[in-house]
Amino acid sequence: MQAHYTQGSIYKHIISMSLMSAVGLLSIFIVDLVDLYFLSLLGEIEMASAVGFAGTILFFTIAISIGFMIAMGALVAREIGAKNTEAARYFFVNIMVICIVVGVIVGFFVWLYTPELLALMGAKGRTLELSSAYLSIIVPSLPILCIGMAATGALRSVGDAKQGMFVTLIAGIVNAVLDPIFIFVLDMGIEGAAWASVMARVAMMFYALYFVIKKHNLLVKFKASKFVEDLSEISKVAIPAILTNIATPIGNAYIMFTLADFGDSAVAGYSIIGRILPVGFCLVFAISGAVGPIIGQNHGAGLYDRVRETISKSFVVIVLYCIFISLVLFVIKDNIVSVFGVDGEAANLIVLFCIWVAILTIFRGFLFVANASFNNLGKAKYSTVMNFGKATIGTIPFVYYGAMYYGAFGIMLFEAIGAVVFGIISSVLAFRVVKTIEDNHIPVVDEDRSKHIAETQHLGSTASGLARTMECNTYEHGFWKRQVHKIRNLF
Image 1 (cartoon, rainbow, N blue to C red):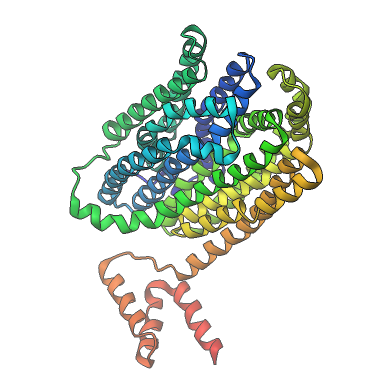
Image 2 (cartoon, rainbow, N blue to C red):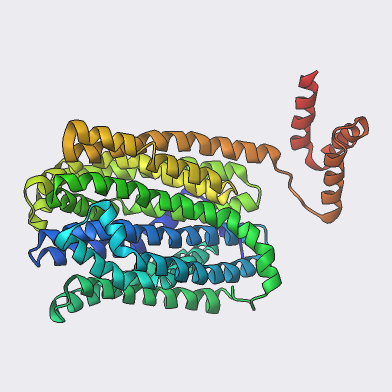
């Protein structure tokens, strides 16, 4: 296996990876949007509201699978970048085992307490009934989703962006074909939409595993000793990554709780926006997963100029793309309202989103890229802090005062402003993290050289240690020259 992203044009890698990832994601996002459209044809405003409440809990379970995908991508890409193929294979197998265990446990408890969780967010009556029916079918398939998403992360980490795209594309196609059959032909309503999603997850899992195992040969025999050895390293990335992604549905739960006071129409409008946003800005959602393997491989190879370049050029792509999509949404805002046949508060929210809020997605993109950087640079805790900060400090007070002064629109606008704040903070922090890692990086070329540098680090606090450190200029002239310079400045 070769580290494809350690050479060549950064822009080319970002755009090709993002576009392939976006095509797959777009298929899923469009299906979600069409799914909501089909359900709206049934004539119940509570149907769209139910999808909104269910989506918040569903996002919580999906966040766990995304966390495993991030961990898989970061660890496998890093080992491939460092040319440690065997280590990459064991990370793949061990993460898959964890996916199954965690997926079963979390899926069971969410399924068990689904009605209580929905009621806690403010769902009631017919909306609560519909939401519960939807989730009771789809939540038990969490282990399948975790395996499929993690396998997708493995495909991207080895540079197979094409099959990574087809994984999600296949899932979208299966869902799109089965949705109208289950909803209308079999007259299953919202339960039919749930079963279509389950079938899509099954298709995604089998497709991804086939290429990871057959084409890239990442499967090795499970070893308990190796699992225990890798568990700590996996936990360092997976736990913060999962917590990072769980933060978003926590923030969304508060938003739904606050929106519930403004009625089903407001919740329905927000649900429609929640489907329009990822469809319109699919490249923004795709780019975080796309740049992860690029950053991971260059980090593994010690190419920090390319890591910085990947982050900065990702920001450029996000800004240009978001400006274009925001203009498109501004032009077609009335058509969106007409297609979904909504009025009142729902229609008002959709129009105001297209005019004022859509452009602020730029800063969500910055946050996504920064978090991908942290996860792939071994600083996953930073992404956890940023996302939880956004979900709490950047959401709760903003939404509270937005609702107080501007109603349902204030909730949406002020939540986006909170994303602006954390998007800027995380961007600055990402570049600082790269600089810190680069300054402390010690490239290792051979065993003797590694031992020599380790000895000088151990003796660095003594006079002889300082002399040995200076001798290392033979190997790492530029790096150690900076360190000697820093020591001299102390005096």
